[in-house]
Amino acid sequence: MKVKEFREERSRLTQLCLDKANLNIKRFFALDHAAYDKGEIPPKYKEMMGLVASLVLRCDDCICYHLDQCQASGVSETELNEAMNIALVVGGSIVIPHLRRAMAYWEELAGLSD
Image (cartoon, rainbow, N blue to C red; front, side, top):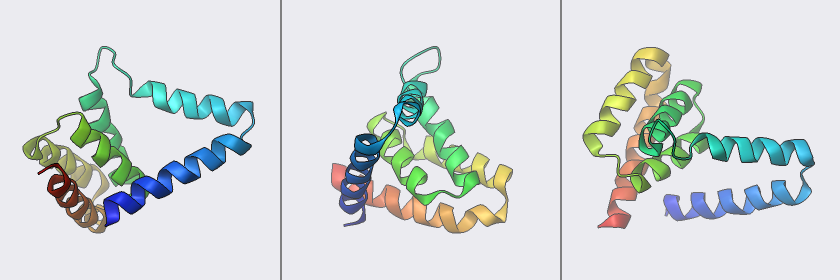
């Protein structure tokens, strides 16, 4: 199962990084986490922005992470499709392979919540 494997590997590697990290690395991890906290922009929309950026930058790990967070934040499939469309328009056709894998991962997430 891709979702389970991704979550376990991400958790293990994040802990490894934090265990070995210097203060600046730990601060960056904290800053990254805080960027998605509740504020004027709800976390749901911040996660969709993170997803768009990740698709355009073509980072599959980040895409999976933001898809997890989008689902947890209550992003609907129609909202997801609009966000993915923005990524495709901004990033161009090079985004398509990542869009395909993102859709497959989203389907797997949906299967877990059924």
